[in-house]
Structures are given as structure tokens and as C-alpha cells.
Length: 116
Image (cartoon, helix red, strand yellow):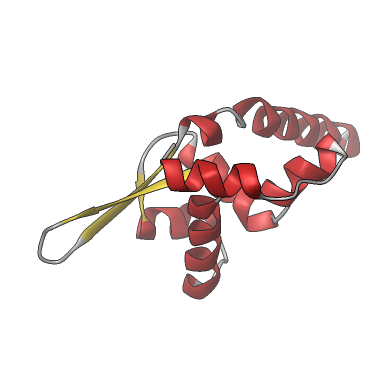
């Protein structure tokens, strides 16, 4: 993690409740779906937008910037014409895989129960 991002995270006032802390980082519908997409590997903006679903360009950009500031997402810009930008998870972002897996498992169980 970049030193400036880590310093920013260390200086932030975090909630006393660990669940609230986690939700403050990923408690938005779009952030969870972005994490889901990036757990499968590096994505370009258009790929993320298609994978996430009905998110506007403005909202996706905003969420990616927030996740980058929180140290969850790495943004890499390639000096090409036209410019190419790729997004991937940082080690901190990857550490959320069990959380996303638990959400997926619960959702699958819930849907199975509701359709039986």
C-alpha cells in the first residue's frame, strides 16, 4: 500500500464496532459489486461497468476513487494513445475475499430456500 494512503488510513477515526468499520469501507452496493468483479482479476473501466450492472459512469468513477483512497483498489494508467486504465485489488482489497465469499454463500442459500 502506498505510504500516503496508509498514513491517511492510520490517521482516520474508525468506529469502535468492527462491523461498522468494515461497512464504512465496503458498505455501498456498488463497492461490493466492484470487489466481486476485481476478485477475478484486473479490469478496465468498461469491463467493470458491464460486470457491475446498472451503475452510471459517474457513480462508478466516484466509487473507484473512494476505494483507491481507502487502499482497496489500485489504479494503473498506461501512457498510450488512447490512454488505458486498469483497476486491480491491493492486498488489503484481496483480504476482503472471505467477506465477499460469505455474502455469496448466504445469498445462494437464501435463494435456494426461497425457491424450494
